[in-house]
Image (tube, rainbow, N blue to C red; front, side):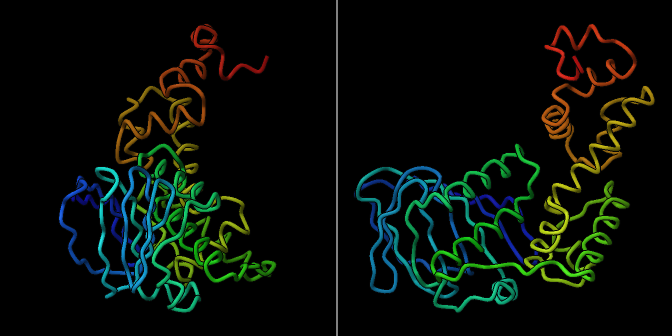
Length: 282
């Protein structure tokens, strides 16, 4: 078993697990370290927990409660891969469901969870503007709705809530060049990460991380259009910590590379016509 930590915050950690166990390998007892939902993206394994047995395949969810023992078996295939979201007790309390919801052991491949699991994998690979911590909270919240049978109906945002969301957006935009995470923005708003994510998304129609990325893209587009600074300098100055991530994200938004976008902004229409005219108005 290999474990790679993709994200670690006070409220949530995201870990990529890859197991190479095969039929015939002796199972052993393990202990869940935290409240967790782990999306099985590949392979299969069995799980025995609290007197129950489960068979998990791609799309299933392994559910963990801190301190609970479990045992994984590999009687049918070799290996599996999981994307695990581990939540703090404070975050679980803010989400508001009873503790026994976290002792269900596993959830089958349900479409409502599978689409979020795949979105999470896309975010983990840097191919989505949604934050990995954000989609982890969305996955956990949707799981709780399903296992508890309690549909969450968010109340209409009041004037105070709208002001809080707008103030948060202004705060994010002013600091978009700095490292900002969900917990930090939530703390500035005086809310838990879970409630902040719900409020911000409900009022503004995008998640906080999506807004952060788009603020950075807006600044980058302006700098590309206005001057001749190196693309690498612009990427780091607007807040992207990785050049390849900036190029990939910018291309997804503009349908053109940063360099081609600059050429188009300088009046070179031919270059984009040769690329399929992604920014053409015709």
